[in-house]
Image 1 (cartoon, rainbow, N blue to C red):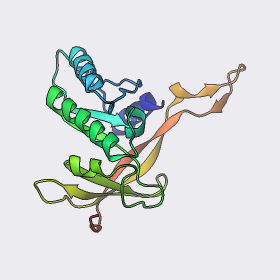
Image 2 (image 1 turned 90 degrees about the vertical axis):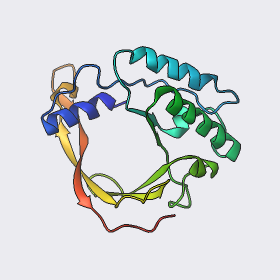
Image 3 (image 1 turned 180 degrees about the vertical axis):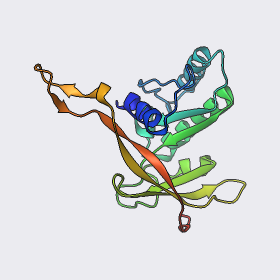
Image 4 (image 1 turned 120 degrees about the vertical axis):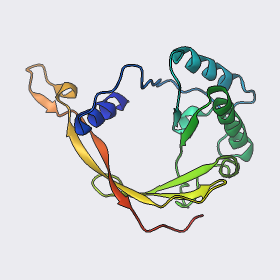
Length: 193
């Protein structure tokens, strides 16, 4: 999944240590957006149990498609997914970040049913090809407050010898590593959708 490599790359690059218990992740998809809200309630209970000694600040759903069992191509499917995300917000008392893809033909809108756009508080559009090119993040929707200024990041490669892949003779055949984001500042604001 590469998640451990991304976290270790961040720690190595920024010369920080991650405090025990400050980050938890589960690679199993939560299956949100079904006919009933059961999956969201199970996820809330599971997270609360795992975080019983601390305050949760952010829950990331990576990606909407992987975390959804509903019909994300339809407005009904997106409404059900948004309903379950609201259950997470209410039950956990934290921000829920949904990572989602833009449309296949129209890169200025989200993929699938359009009802999700109306249900969320903030939409941030990422534009760029990724490493080594910079990526611009633009706020295209901000409910009840002004949109923030667009900003850019660039990517730096970090070598992680602990993740090297070696052949039976011990020779490195794949150098482990990952990318980290570096803030490059505010960009000229793009037009909102």
